[in-house]
Image (cartoon, rainbow, N blue to C red):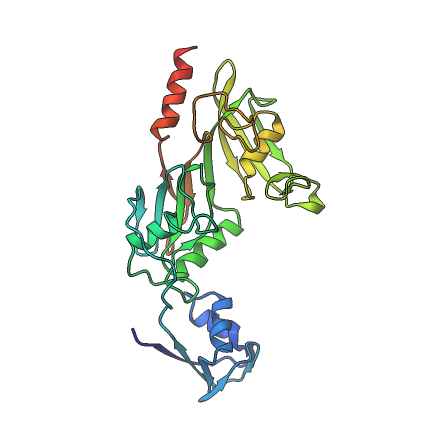
Length: 308
């Protein structure tokens, strides 16, 4: 694949930064990606190479950009079957199974959602100059449900903007031990690193964490458990699990933040991202996607209902 060449004429009367101008001209790239191209010598102004990202452009100057093809990723594509809820040229909406890690990490160098996405889209345009899918948000290993994967840099930026502005609606179903203090409620409790276990998260003072908000409502009550619908308004690590434990009703099967020995026969925690509402790139009206509870969680509910 050859380099892509683009030329632009700066026609504004007032000066503007080079990186700001090119970000407007090339909306499929993030500003940091544009700045990287400038620093790496891929941009010329009036025929002369420049490496200063904040260079002020003057009226009538020509800007040439050479965009190299995405670098091959060191990730190996794997043929792993995915439950694809929706797909177009910009993104994938996948119903992730419990047990699958989203991103490669120490101890998880294969079999991840990223490896599977590369296998599903072998001609991926790439994110950040590399042939890899764009993960905008994450689900814990043992959380199942809907997750969005960007195929292009432009789609990645589009989705990131919605998550930052909190316009994405994510809704989970969670079965908890016991019951929350009220049938419906809102938890506003900052989440940060635990001071006693640095690998875990906890409710902490605001100055030591980040604001975290979760809303919930009861869907079904059982003698010793409650099925909740949980809507996190922020996206902190382990937020729902930490907030439910904070309320005194930890997620069933969560042996990290809840009971050490699970109260029901389940080898994962009962947390499923079942609804996602998001505006797709180039559209203005939100789309809603849903994913039914997986069989193992349905079976747990059926067992509880049989005892009512």
